Length: 388
Ligand code: NDP
Ligand code: MG
Image: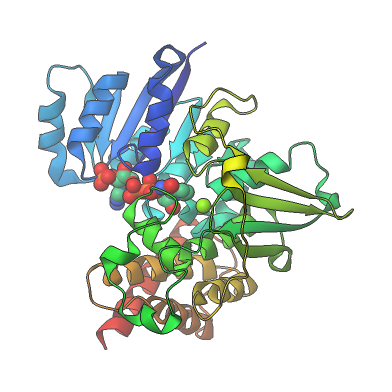
């Protein structure tokens, strides 16, 4: 039976890996919507290749280009945030949430409100609005399948296990581009250097977030929000080979480790075929060649993001929304060349601190509007800190 699927963020790194799997079995899927932003050529090319019903670009100024690229194909085209939400309202059996940033939150929420199955790569959704996202899934009987490699690993390791028998969860971190640089040098590293990941081939923003470990900080919060672990049950270990993605420690001292190649098609494929397993064409690991797996404790001077994540979890409420927005804005300003690499941590710290001390983060009920409000304020404060 064919399954109706949509991909939000189809032109990105995760979107392209998802399309790679879908294109290998075209008869199994009926593609409803593909969305992108600036890469109109790729969006149109893939919409035609998979015979999508509609292609949507988030950038309204590019509608004419998209229309031209799809002329004569019978594929609908649309543009803008509202059009992405309209695409999310179209019924599917499975949808991939792989837009970058908090822009991916609302489309995912729409899909959950239709009781759909959401493969969630967009970790910002859980960081900024985890309680709302999880509550929505519960209320509408929708399913969220984690796609972030560590969370897919945890999810897979917990199949058939009693959560009461779980003592701790350990997520691994590659350490990113600067894991072996002296901490004193980090103030002066360039955007180009921060954009090179030692193991994974990913979009630029998440690659820089890996170098600063803001990505890992987000994943710690993601782990708390999705699986319900308490902050003290979640550990991070630097594992330079990125082959173990996460480990679950049980009350009897046993540890279940999930091992797989550093290729997101494994985690995407797990979510695509869940609850079954399907063939995924990733590298088969040869342990004789790998020979060693290394581990080291993360250094908090090098990665202040991990400490910030702890305080965000302790504060709770809308601290995640403030943290996420401040991080996104600090990253924009680093990429623009306005601030140094290590200043990103200071900015995020400053924003969360300012909103927290003005008692703005403990709003009784979390809604889309409260998240948007904190998001806007956090970005404004981040800019104020940079510009003064
Ligand atoms: P990319 O930057 O490669 O792709 C982002 C996608 O979002 C593109 O399709 C892009 O369109 C689109 N987009 C950009 N801005 C907007 C906007 N304002 N509104 C709507 N769409 C927009 O990101 P990744 O694929 O690396 O990451 C996607 C998500 O998955 C992120 O949340 C990331 O944290 C998460 N993730 C990624 C992993 C990876 O290996 N890459 C691993 C685990 C999680 P266009 O390219 O056309 O401009
Ligand atoms: Mg990850």
